[in-house]
Every structure is written in structure tokens, then in C-alpha cells.
Length: 257
Length: 271
Image (cartoon, rainbow over the protein chains, first blue to last red):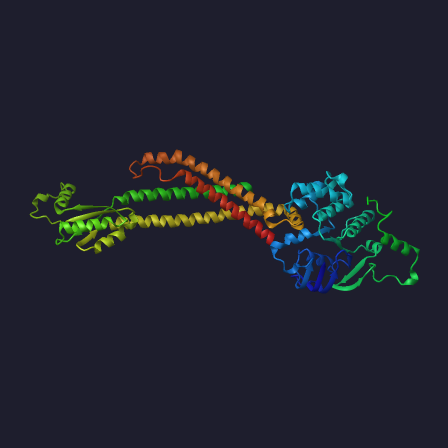
């Protein structure tokens, strides 16, 4: 689904954000991109929706060589890739409904389709009862869920999240991550760039660690700080955690299934 | 800021309209004057009336020629004594010194020199005369006025375009958050541009409309009084087709607005 080959990104001021990255992300995966601020996580995501072009290498998304795309074709790409940000990026003068519908309207969708799709995603994120509310009347978690709904309304194959829990308290952060997990279960490829160790460790998915623009580690069922703990320190809490993740969100999530 | 943009367009269209009107009017005056200018072709003594008739018919076939008349020497002498009555007593002349002549009038005064050159080369024509100085000076004057005026107007159009462009750029900047989000969710460039293009169009159109109204006011009030004060100006009827004129001015305003807006948004989107 997503593939980077020999990708380097050097900014005009000389900063080397990415250095010789080789990565493959299969369809339907759930991947964490971790590392300190400034290690290139956001830059890598930006390559995937063509907000940035790599200095070297090729970036392929859904069989399209994104780095070579003509400007006029970028909107088409953006409709296949949903993006969610730390600061939500909602239109403050529009309601929840209007914010989500906006993403459909700019693609020229018919009113019939809008009336059908918007309620569907609002249900998915659990905000159907708040359609007419404005962003400044929502909690951080609700705003992020609105942003997620907007990112999903065009049925994208990929969902990119750049520090989605950055502005959220732990409870809201978990809610949002549970939502992302459920979205992933439905088949969407999800990539989350984060430096929130708690959230990463709670889910035990593939973790790609970046440092100084290079891939330092790449582990399935990984933890934020590196390899899974050696067998000797496995205790009940770790097992319980693993079981919860395998079985999907249960009591932790207060969202409707 | 909007008002500045509209105001600039108004000034531009006012001056453009005045310039165009003046050019048309001057042109008409020039035509009226030079339309009366005749080319006199003096025939050699060897040319018979039959030859003259042949010359006349061949000249009439030239599309640039409006009319040709034959002035035999007797008639020429009579016209001259009329003109110079009181100054010279032509009855003192023992023989007619004048040659037979053709008087040629052209369709377009600008063609006078060219046609005169052609006539001079015709067999049987000894000499060709026309008020060369007056014609050439008039043609040169109109031409220079045309060029100067055009350069001036072009400068104005550029100024108006720049100001409109700046106004739009401010609006674009003010809405940059929405534009960024529109780009994020995959709106096409055209979809993003459209509202701004529309704003440019309205600005241009509004400015042009005000200018047209002012010009109309000027025409009814000032121009008519002007004509009454100078009745000797050889001008019959309006020089301009008003419907077309107004349409052209509005179109220029709208176009400048649209083009300036297009560039403005384009530069922002590319940056």
C-alpha cells in the first residue's frame, strides 16, 4: 500500500529530515511512527500526502508514485488519503456536520451522497448527536473525532495521523486511539506518528522508530522504547494488556461499537 | 481596500473611455477635413479628352478613389478667377495658362499620399498636387495622439491590475486557514480559486460601471455644451456607437478584474 525507497528529505535550510528511508506498509496495517520531536515523523507523513516532495527516492502510495505526481493530480491523491492533525484543523465557523460535509462538497459530491455519507461517519465516531454543535463547544476529544470523521468521509484507503493525541488528555487520547483501532479493523491502513509512549505501549502494534531521519527499529507488537520485554519480566499486567489488545477495545472504550 | 481597487478601475475606465471617445472624434474630424482634400492631377498638353476619359475610368476602378472629375482648362480658369476675384483680373490674360486637370477625391484620407503617387505615374499626367503639408501633418498628429494615448492607457490598465491583485491577495491571506483545509481534503485548484475570481470580476465590473455612468453624465452635460460653443467644428452626428462603447468599457473592467484575481490566487497556491 505504502512504500518508500531510498527516500531522503533535505530542507532548503540544510536540515536533513529523512535519510535513506526504506519502508513497506501493507494494506490494512496499523503502524506507529515514533521518535523525538524533529526526527522526521511528520516529514515522512507529509511525503505521503504530497505536502512535501522528497529530495531523493520514490514514494509509492496505492500504486501511485506520489513524488512524481503533477500538481493538478494532488487533489485526487488527497481524497484517497485522510489526514488528522494534532490541532484538529477544523473550520471554526462551521458545525460538526458542515465540517465533515465540507470534505465531500469540495469534491463535487451530490447532495444525495452527502446526506448519506455524513451521518454514517458521524455514527462511526460517535458524534451523531452533536451534528449541529460548533467546534468551540466541543471537548478536545470530540474535536479530534470530528476531524477523523472528516478524514474518513471520502472512504480513504489510508488514514494518516500526525500526533493525534497531542492536545488531548489521557482519557480522550485513549478514546481516539480506540476509534482508530476500530477504523483499522474495517480495513483502512492507519499510520500514526506520535511521541505518546502510553498510547503506543497500550496497543502493541508495529512500531517504527525514527532517529535523526533514519529507521532505527521496526518491530511488530512493539513498544515505544524498543523491543518487547524479555520473558522473565512478563507479569499479569502485561498479559492482560496483550489480551485486551487482541480482543479489541472492551471496557476501556466508552464509544458505541 | 476594496474601495481603492474599485476607485482605481473607475479612474482607469474613465480615462480609457475619454481617450477612446477623443480618438474617435478626432478621427471623424480629420476625415471630414481631409475628405474635402482633393488631389489635382494636371494633364500634359498632349493628352486628348479621349485619353482623359480613359484615365478617369481607370482611376474610378481603384477602390481607394471616391470620385474623379474632369476640369478642362476653360473651367479651371473660370474657377480660378472666381477664387482670386479682386486680386487678379484674369481678363488681362491673352491665353489660358492652365492645363486640363483631374480632381480626385479618396475614400480614406490616409490614402491620399499613396493615391497621389499612383496618379503621378499615369500616362498623360504631368504634375500632381495636394495639400501635402496639411494632410501629412494631420495624419501624423492623429497617429501620435493615438500612440501616446494608448501607452498612457496601457499604463493605467497595469496599475489597476496591480491594485486589484493586491486587494485580492489580502483576502486570500485572510482566508488562508480555510484554503489550507480545502487543499487538505482534496479540493481542486479551480474550486478554491472561484470565489476570488468572482470577487475580482465584481470589483472590475463595479469600477467600470461607475466610470460609464460618469462618462455618460460628462457626455450629456459637458460635451453638448462644448459643441454648442464651437459650432464650426466639422462634426456631424455622434462619433461613437454607444452600445458597443459601453459594452467594451465594461468588458475591459471585468477582464482586468478577472485576470488580476487569477494571478493573485495562482501565486498564493503555488507558493
